[in-house]
Length: 416
Image (cartoon, rainbow, N blue to C red):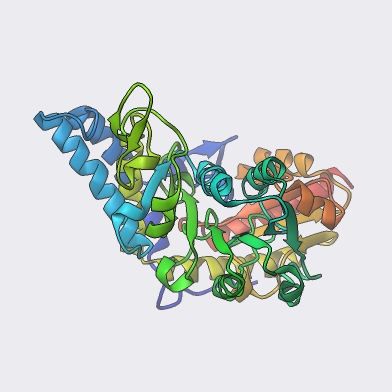
């Protein structure tokens, strides 16, 4: 099997790898092969240095200080928000709300918009492949408001069965929330098609971009959605910070998610008035260093070019599907066409448990994920308790997929 040749849209992967210190590690005496970026990506030096520089030179609380350190911190914090807004082509930085992660972003919408707008008998449409983060928050608010959950089914090849939309969407549909890309199947959803169908019946839409924003160009204006969420730690940034983007008119109409300092304009003993966007949804001291790190991560990815990031991952995914098909007894789940899937490959091998596979792969310094990947309903639909998942990112090489396949043969040898 011949490794793919770089396309004109590709970048120098070896130069990128040099920016990630952790990739220099050896595990069990062998060079690390990190194939778990769908869970959390590694961090380049520029992000590490941006956070370090903030703590070394400019740490202070933001927005309220009138001394130089605070002004410097505030400037860096808000510039990071502006970088994120440009990265997703938001209409303005006021629409970018910093949260802890994509999970909190979805909870914010479910609890704030949902509590204010859902009524008994209303319907919330999700998909059968959703991550628990885009399932459990809607379960909670549906139970509280006596709303009904409905689900877009999957086809046999792991795509959404959009022929079911006409039967699912109606005048009772208030919310359609779905993943931009499945973290298990790799399935890429036709976002605009679903958004347009939802809007046609008067529903709002939320796109879980946790597996989208790190891997492909995202233009929220072109997508047409009402909310888009993603996490910093999956896109070269630090943990502990995520993003909720929402259309300004919706965010302005929503009540606060949390109360406290920073999110207020005026406070009395009995009542308070809320601050303007985005601060209405950012109670308390924010994740300042993390926001600055996210801004640096956005700069890093923007310099590579998200079209090039997507092109690189398609090459790796195509190569991985070809190589994995050579392994007897191995079954891969999700679409066969790399145009329809992201850089995620989940599989089962013979009757070997996913945890055993991952343990043996770790002994070969190949890091993969094993389990249900926070998609228990999806695994139940597939008739599985767990899968092994390899996921690719900007720093991975075809040779690392070769290492994965070699290690899978070692699994077969041990369990033969």
